[in-house]
Amino acid sequence: MSLPPSVTSVGAACAHVMLTADPQAKLMAARAVARAWRLGRLAHRFDATMPDRPARPDTPILLSPAHMPRRGKIGSERARIAMLHALAHIEFVAIDLAFDLIGRFGDQFPPDFTSEWMKVGADEAMHFALLDRRLRQLGSHYGALPAHDGLWQAAEETAGDALARLAIVPMVLEARALDITPATVDRFEGAGDMASGKMLRRIVDDEIRHVAAGTNWFVWATKRMGIESPKYYQMLVKRHFRGSVKPPFNDSARRQAGLTEEFYAALAT
Image (cartoon, rainbow, N blue to C red; front, side):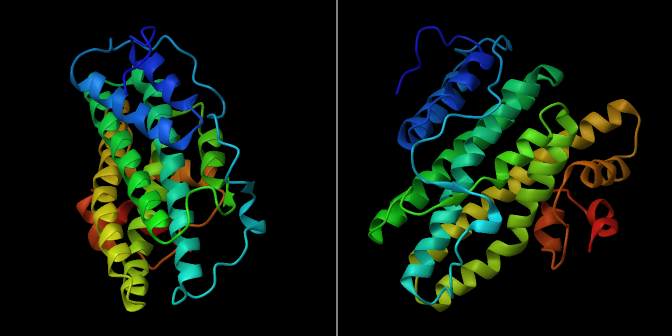
């Protein structure tokens, strides 16, 4: 997929991804933008306004988290499809989160920030493609079930503060995925679904790098500000995160990402 001729800057490219509604077209746009940046075809210029909300397809129907139907035990194929659909939606939204982060805040960071988050955006597109393909192998597809809109609420909450966005999205929400995905893998494999388990292992390995990207740039920025990273992180989480930071924690994976206990232990509930 090639980009429209008018898309010549990083800002315009990020807005292009976000304003693409169709899932297949969005993942192709994400890949095309990441490739264009890698090949030096986009100016490091932030001349486009990021939309308040990304474009969305007609399906899935979006519900509040409280109104989502229960998935049931993972032993049934129906429950596994529901879980894979929920994960596919997370990855679909994560495409927009990565490109919104670049387009909204990239001018506050050096070009390496754009390079790293372009890779993250391409990863999220690949994860979505893997999950949607697995759903189709099981006789379903993305959009067949309702999904919740909680992830984008976190983006709206942190739209005015780059460090709050880094603290909440990669360092809380994606870090939580490091905590819970290994047990999810075990449940899939325990039900005999080895293909899904293998796919989820691949995804969680990538997510360690994504949490590391968030943590490293958060620390970079706070050091430049002359403030203590863990304490500032804790303040931002208390201010902007509506949920709770709760164990059990995958301390090993978090350490690999640079998100050590001094960041989150004081927040644990």
